Length: 338
Image: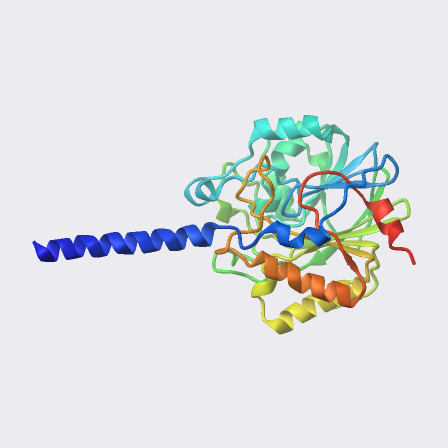
C-alpha cells in the first residue's frame, strides 16, 4: 500500500513539474514594455507612404491609392492547431481584414518564402482580391495554385535582380537565404513541386527558396528582409533608406554568425532607419496585442538588444512597430536627414 502511494505521489509530482516547465516555456520570452524607448510614435500622413505591420513579416505599404502587401499572413492558427491538425486560411477573418484595410487596392503580394507563417493565406487572398499579382518562388506560386479561382495571369515567378512595375511601385526581388535550420524547420532548399492541396500539414509548406524585396516608391527605397539568413555580398550594391530586418533566432546563433549577419545587412545597406520584424508570437490571433515569441521558440528580446546595439553603434535609428497603426515612412526618413 505504501509503495502504491509513493508511486502515485511521484507521478503527481512529475506531472506538476512538467506542467510548470511547459507553462514557463510557452510564456513570452520577454515584455515589449522593456523596449518602449524604441516604439514608433504615431505619425500617419496623407502624403507619402504609410506602412502597417501585422506581425511576422506581413507588411502593408499604402500610398493612399495603391497598396503592396508582403506575405499577407493573417490567419495565425494556434500552436495546438498547427501541431495537431492541417492548417488553412480563416476566410471570414480575411474578408474582414480586406474590408477594414481596403485591400482591394492591393497591386501585388510579395512572398518572401513558402513556410506557412508567410504563405498560408496567399491562395485565399489571391482569389478574394481583384486579381493582385502574386510574386514569389515556384513553391509559393504552387501554393497559390491550390485555389481554383486563382488565374495563371496573376502569378509571376520572382527572378533575382529583375525589377518589375506594380502600379506606382517598383519592386526588385533579391535571392536570399533563410534563417539557419532548427529541428522543426529543417527543409531549407526543399520545394513544393505541384499545387499544394489545402488544408495541409504545416510541414508540407516547404521553404522553397527565399527572397528579399527592394521596393522603390517616389523618393524612397525600402528593403524588406524577412529571414535571419544572408548570402555574402548580396547587398553590396543595394542602398535603402529603411530596412525591415528579420531577427527570428538571431540570439540563438553563434556570435560570429550574429556579427556577420549584421555586417551583411545593417553595415552594407546603411539605412537611416531599421525596423525589426519576425519577432512576434505568430500562434496568437491578430485581435490580441503582439507579444514576443514564447521561450521555447526563441529569445526575441535578446535578438532585439543585439540589433539595437549594432544599429546605434552605426547611428542608425531603430523603430519598433508593435501594432497595425499606420506609420509614415516619408516623414520618418526625412526626419533622419542631417
